[in-house]
Image 1 (spheres, helix red, strand yellow):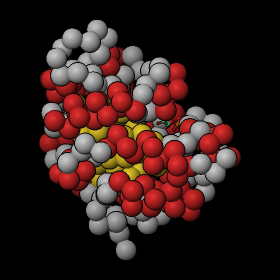
Image 2: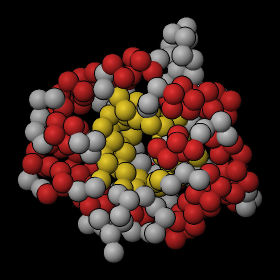
Image 3: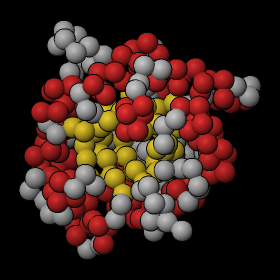
Length: 261
Ligand code: PGA
């Protein structure tokens, strides 16, 4: 039985990839796609480069086949790692939604734990960024997840309930498009993960709490464990970070998802 609703695989490049490296990554990923039936399946691939590479990634895709055709069908898209919480073009260092749309961005990562932990990101700012994204037709990938201490204290559901409060102003229509990424902080970049069954249980909890239908898993996803996560009934894809930097590894993650459709 395939996953009728499709899957989402989003690659989070974080602070990596120069303009040249981004071009090489796309050339290689495109070459891999040309030899495979993947370009046809109900799978959304989202690439989230650093801000400096957004423009070149968008331009480069236009020159590649099948990537360009996949982008036109919504099967391959660009995500930003940031969006201004203000629609007024008045926050130095931020990027307004119209600038993102201008370089072909369709998705945006919001509330990543690295922003919460190291940059002082608050639930209030996350809620504002969600509103700006949704009101400009950008699809948020809202990241939520508990720290190791919260996990050990058995507080995962309490923490998630608080983090999901940022959705309270989102309309029913917006909830249909928003994606949530469940990323336990202790699994990010550590090689440690929850069991696929435990991740599925938490994602079921998130779906019940939020009425968001698409929830993906992130935190040390790689080409060896991806299929175990994606085959769980409630896990709708993944958000690999480190494993997205190599186009071959990322391709194998996408491929393992395609076998489930
Ligand atoms: P990781 O990162 O796959 O390297 O653990 C995931 C993320 O931070 O989104």
